[in-house]
Amino acid sequence: MITAVGRLTSQKGFDDLIRAYPIIRRVVPESKLLIVGDGHMRIELESIAERERVRDNTIFAGFVNDADLVGALRASDVVVVPSRFEPFGIIALEAMAAGAPLVVSRVGGLAEIVDDSVDGLKVEPNNPSAIAEATVRILSDRELATRLAAKGGEKAKMYSWENVAKKTLGTYQKAARDVRYE
Image (cartoon, rainbow, N blue to C red; front, side, top):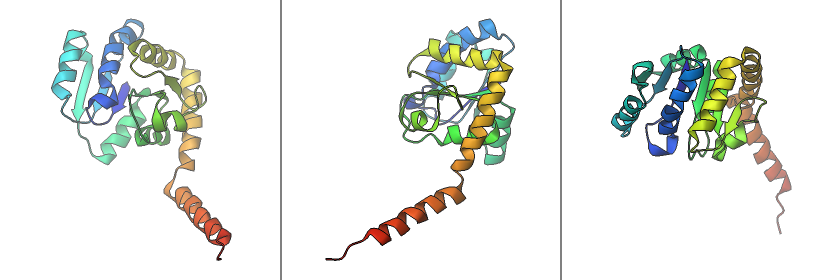
């Protein structure tokens, strides 16, 4: 199961993932593509899947609640975040926390969160061939997938609300200590 999550908009790059999917299916013919989310591009993306002859193996789940999203991420063999622009990339952290290996575009927050070949694989944006190659690599190498997922799970803990709150408080405390009144 290859999973992608987000608003169905151009910036999310789901069209690149759908264009990569026929390449993936040549190597991993039993694969399924699950796209979770909704948006104005849904009809266009379904049309691309039809043209690429992968519509029968692509599930457009629409919006799902949080519990179902976590379940989908946990059931995924790989989560792909093919964004063209991504200021933060919370879905990458959610996938890491769920124990799923990742393929992400080398953009914005995704590029900062994921260490290439350590806790995920990075690809250049707008590149279906690179998306396909990285996805197949994870699907074909269980040892790699397991290692990336484990390291990703460790990293996700660093971004827990408790850790974020502690770091924020520490920053405020340091700022208060460093204040100089003149």
